[in-house]
Image 1 (tube, rainbow, N blue to C red):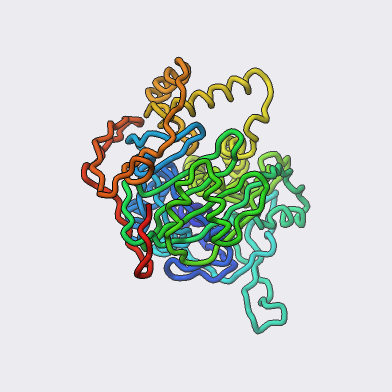
Image 2: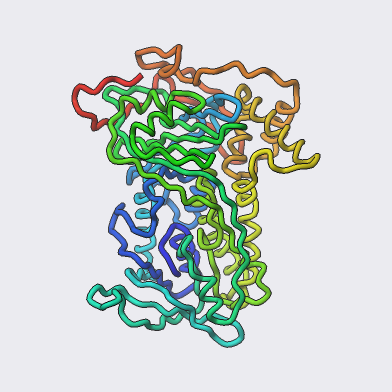
Length: 490
């Protein structure tokens, strides 16, 4: 296993159930606990494990979601615990089976890594860089050439040495050298599809204002037709807020807190700006503009070695605006586990795996690279009209809101929900009039005391799920590290 990203860790777990020994080769030093790893430059931005990712992780690491919560991750029910400004307006805060585990990326990776470290079949080889593949007979890969970091050497590395393996998986991320490794062995490089997204991000952490009281725990401003800007405020470990604003139109991201406040005020609703105006910044603003989507088509190669596979961002690096990265990483590991188990051996299965992963990635790739309104033809026009009607219906109908959120998370909605939402979306179109967020603590009708929440009708949107009624008399309280005298938030 090359790389200890989430894609690498989950793939290593899938292999550990099939192989006698799994070696995870990592170029950087791996911290104990939620420390920063150099190979994850996007770790400072806001992350959340969505529903499908949680379900997949539970299959690979039973009980890991509880481990994440104990470590500090915050469970957010979507949209029950969230103020969500959809493409056509605020969504009702109904009960669904959708949720998110919100935490810093360092914490998410560390909990998964610690679970994997507890498996005696898995070994981590830190500060080792893979430089080439070892070819075997009849178009196979039988190992990798690696070198260990040594700062005493002139070039900073020890001499290369061979690590034998029955199956090699590359999860080294966007900077993967797999195409070059294949070319060195006489194979063609895979074709690439590249889509310039124009998305840039700015993220920082805040301590909530002193005395902050809210009947929600998260805020999400989605993109809308004519306005690609997005923003999220998520609770993370330590009672902090992680705030990310995405421009989406090619403009530079905010570079400091003043520019971040200006960007928040320019969103379709100023609520985010109102929330962070009196919050305490806990560090600088970190920005990123490396968001172009890139897909490498290994499944199209007419000749490619067996016993070698590429996963994660090394295979498909998508615009983070859609939040599919960690979900695809987990689902790819489940595909690897399923096909290895069904095939019974690691020999002769790589081609099937490459095709299965390409099929799995295709919907997320299309969703993240198709510009809104760019497609032509009758089918495209119908799709845009339906999406517009669904977005408008989602502002008043809980079933339409649930269907919209299932689509955002790339989940297949239950048939009952889909048929009910379809009737609403295709029925008489109603004007969207609500302009205030559905909150008793924030907005024109906000009250200064703790709100008493009425029970929210639950929507059973998946087989076997149990909808929980919304508790009454509850509100979200945030620990705070703000200095004395800080003004109370709105």
